[in-house]
Image (cartoon, rainbow, N blue to C red; front, side, top):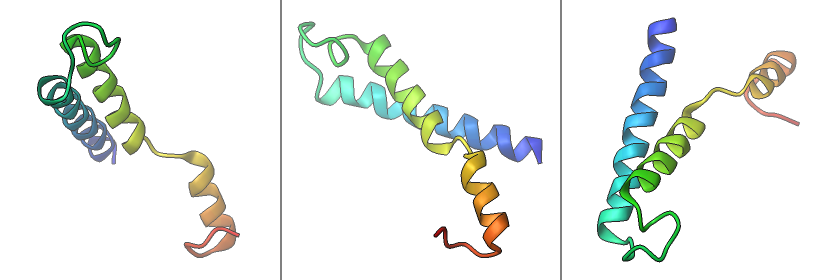
Length: 73
């Protein structure tokens, strides 16, 4: 169970970092932009966004258990 959790977070972090660097490389500007002008900052923001997208939500899981189905009312 923990392996699956860490694998999911790692895949989210790596894919986010790749997308963040790709944003810098293909769309970024010449240093005048705060995020897109620096490859390290752009990669870090992408990494954090990737982790945030795959991070599990305890609230959502507990509501599903209470309702007994996948719909949240």
